[in-house]
Length: 267
Ligand code: SAH
Image 1 (cartoon, rainbow, N blue to C red):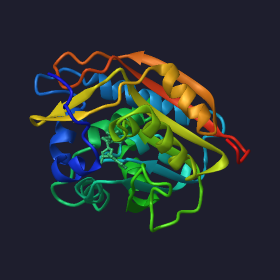
Image 2: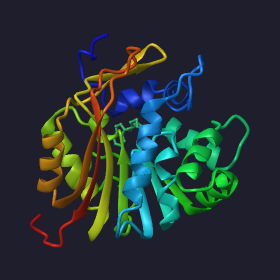
Image 3: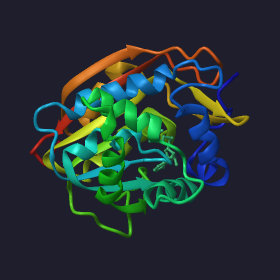
């Protein structure tokens, strides 16, 4: 498979991203043959580790490019009081809201929640964690990371932390756009606050449901340098190899990164 000839921008997401198919392809803990989803498990372990670091706590957390998923909030919700989830695509926000409201037909995250509870020491706490997360997500808003104020016309007070998983590399067609988006979302976090990211490396596409989406091909040092030049100090950075064997994507590794926004206004 090849990457799309023209980079799939936000309008393509709005027109053709199918949240249920996406969840089915990438967010079941094991596939139909019972093989474990190592991509997901690895990412859950990384998020657990990153949100256990010193200082990763506070009142407010903003999730940028949440998509239809909650896995990125499962460890995070233990350390923040209020969460605001942002995404460009209407059907993704609706799918997320379906789970938040516990509506019929919502994706079953229970196995994933149990896995995270086990990492945190008690698998039996899954229902408690689901309830906690449902209470803490206060708003689900539209955003565009390419805009100077991504939540325009809403202005959010700067948060203690922002988390963004697998979003910027999907939303940005080139490095200039990636750097611009980092600066834009950087303004959503207080000086001294944190940025937590999961980014796929060297990926040019991902596919599900016979649809192919573009990805900006990134190297570890490119991401770290972009984060630094967007006004953050990188505090934690770890690469884990990941090679999908089934043609659903062409990534080579996943970068977990935590950075702290510098106090200076000049970045
Ligand atoms: N965070 C989720 C979803 C990643 S998929 C996960 O970890 O699985 C990429 C997401 O980026 C999609 O939900 C898509 O709607 C969103 N997106 C694409 N372009 C965007 C833009 N310009 N601004 C904000 N979100 C965007």
